Image 1 (cartoon, rainbow, N blue to C red):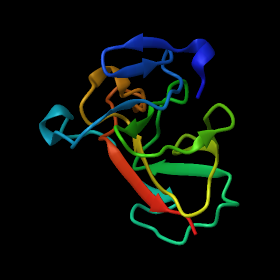
Image 2 (cartoon, rainbow, N blue to C red):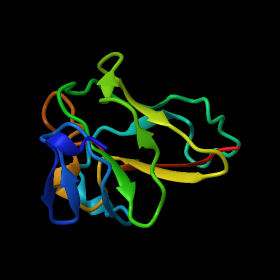
Image 3 (cartoon, rainbow, N blue to C red):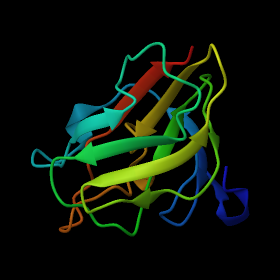
Length: 142
């Protein structure tokens, strides 16, 4: 967790548009997002994937359109384990973002790309500033 840049807010921690894994998520409210909001089209690992190798050092998400590359909101789900974050997130291009992590064996993780229920934690946004629809990535390591 990037605690040095985080400040407490209602429902978790927020890091000036960068990163914090936050215990602040519930089910997605689809009415909270613009109809033309970008969506996640691919992730590594995939949502629901089991038998993920603990040697995986990065979680990635690819969006349906070009994104602003200055902000991120990787968010955890309350009561679920989160991977240890080993560095700041980054973009490999304007579509794909990466979160460096360390994984433990035999663990189910849940990470969200943007918060489903906290508008302040939706820093993945397109060039027009439209926040991407929240996307859950749940996976289990071997």
